[in-house]
Length: 399
Image 1 (spheres, rainbow, N blue to C red):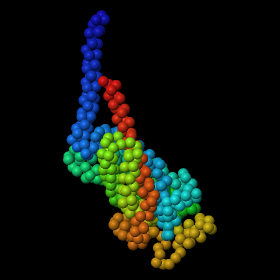
Image 2 (tube, rainbow, N blue to C red):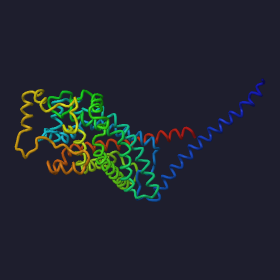
Image 3 (cartoon, rainbow, N blue to C red):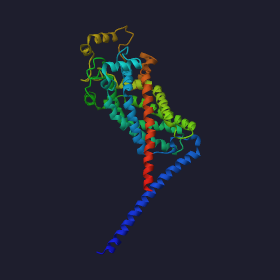
Image 4 (spheres, rainbow, N blue to C red):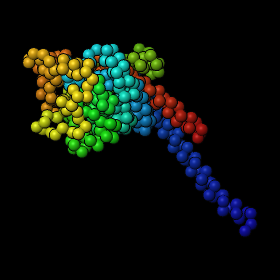
């Protein structure tokens, strides 16, 4: 075959490939320019309401940025979450852990950093990234759908937070049950604090719970978790969206800088955390309390009261006896809550401990939710900008 005939056969294919590449580049350019035009139109149409909708990131960008930000926040603040869990779930009365600084130093001094303050860390990580990944994808989809339907922005943010947390709860509730029990327990055979649980590891906890209490126990306190987390997420993002909108208005630019980014996220998280603290107390107690003997058999990994004194050093045994001594009108342990009703549980906590019982652990919860939210949302915004820059560079390279 001659060279000319070969070239004649190759030329159409080459032209077709070239046209295909040009079409792809044109499609990318049109999509990118359309997104920029929509953002500019929103800014010109309602400059007084410039908010996070100026540039809508791709869903995968939002999901990965949210997942990484949320996981990073959980890693940094896990120790404070442990302190909060100890204060809220302490089965003794009066409680061993009271103030934030005293509780933190006591756990660190007696049990160490890894097995004490970071107990339950593996279980937390099992639900952290998947949960926030699902949350941000659902949140963005719901928010955009509602705003495009001309629903009030405040209602859109609240409702989107509700729905997103409901979708993510399927993943994070089992890890939350494992995490809170292991945080309350601390180290294996812990001589310094007796939670009623004594799991060797995260896997041992999951296996023991499923074998002795049933697989459904991994979703114990599910209703209480939903009742806590739905309003928390809704308030958290409603506060954040409104505060960030105000910050953008004051700064006169969507790029408000690290200081305002951190401040808006931190205050939104702290405010939502404080307001939902009573629900968090009920959730923690439901997930960590030992079942009554007439309702469920004691799991093998639970330490019975009469075994506690035998395993305690003399000084600790004396302390344990003191915890359970006193007038009959004073409870010797935190009451067991009925898992069927959050309202009933809130009433019981109030009747036995007063308003202070509703806000046990409010200090570490406020700090934890504030810093965790700040870390998550600041990283979220910066990762979105970084991924948008990468997308812009790819677009520039194509054209």
